[in-house]
Image (cartoon, rainbow, N blue to C red; front, side):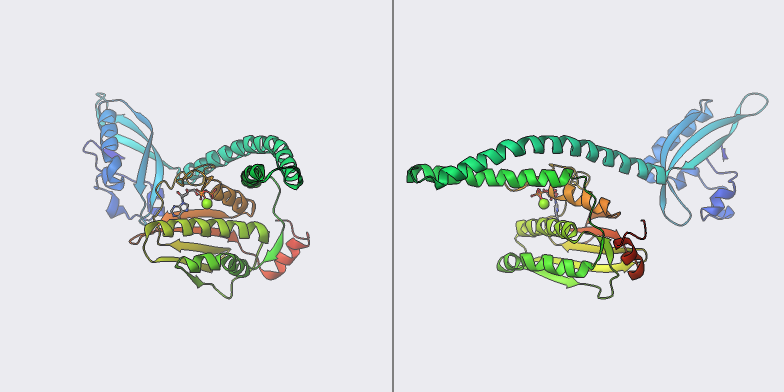
Length: 346
Ligand SMILES: Nc1ncnc2c1ncn2[C@@H]1O[C@H](COP(=O)(O)OP(=O)(O)OP(=O)(O)O)[C@@H](O)[C@H]1O
Ligand SMILES: [Mg+2]
């Protein structure tokens, strides 16, 4: 309950469950609990309620007692005395933090599914004529009657058709609905193999790789090829980002076991992410034409999700560059072998 001056006059038990004490709340302006940028909106709603017009479903960020900010849906209703004058306001706040987050994840997942369907249709259609182009170009190359000048052009056709095939392959693996293989795998090993794949290139371009791998990392259940693809994509992106800056380049790769899941993080000192809300979208790329298709991270997203995990990213605080984090559910040795054998259903 709030009085006509906007001060809290009563708070129910739930506020104390949320970490507040009575003396902190009673007499305190309601607006103090709201994040500063939304305070004008609250003030406007309070005024409107005081003049007799209730306000429903106001979205506000509210500071909880433990210091965390939550997303709340707020309803304000005026209370009147016998003369009909508004004497106080009943404020009902519903914590919608979880459902707001779930909703945005759901929208993203639906978008990905729709794009996936479209993409796989197109990719399959393109695949057939492409196979014919590659096949006939190959045949012509083997034909001794074809003059050298024409061969030169043929080589370009073959090369570009190969490149298209790679893109189509990426599209198909992005749209792939195949479930991952389920075997207990050691992420450190997969990471080391992936680093090895790129070590030569990284070394020769002065990109330093620092490993902090937790040797007691529990296994996860998954598909080592798909996970390798995820790590490779993230590393290639980091490589592109650090090379763009011209600074001494560095990529730190860390593994850690955090209770029920295992975390792999890739921290680079590159350009940082310009549009963090778009980078998992298929075809979103900031790279020049012919360099990136914008599929790398959307493929990673799909693979990690099929493994029951999540992939996150953020720009480093207080330092240059970005960090990508892959979280996968960890399984105790015996349980994971059970899953691999199909004994335990997950
Ligand atoms: N480590 C990073 N630092 C800064 N920006 C990044 C980083 N990783 C990804 N990005 C941004 O996200 C975009 C999308 O990445 P994604 O891997 O999906 O596609 P791409 O690398 O552009 O192309 P592709 O992977 O298909 O060759 C990149 O173009 C880049 O702008
Ligand atoms: Mg990429």
